[in-house]
Figure 1 (cartoon, helix red, strand yellow):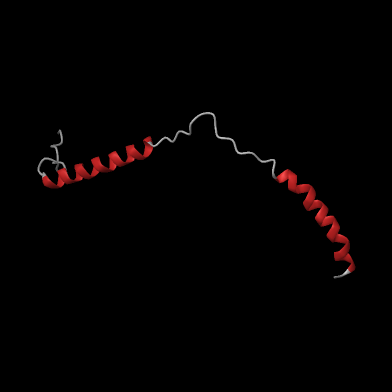
Figure 2 (tube, one colour; figure 1 turned 90 degrees about the horizontal axis):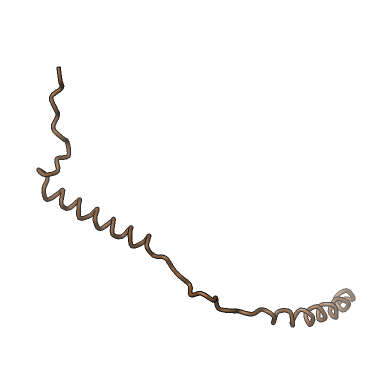
Length: 77
């Protein structure tokens, strides 16, 4: 060991010894109210996706009821 290391060693040990009691002061406390998780957004999105799939299937099964290109209307003269 060099001289600088032997001088630093007691200082490091003293710092570690003084900081050890401070580390044990941390406490974990549960919240007073229960944790609430709001999942309404995910449920709404799932319902919309299911409805969209059902509508697409309905349009494919009944193309005459849901024309893709509406008929042209006669223009007034």
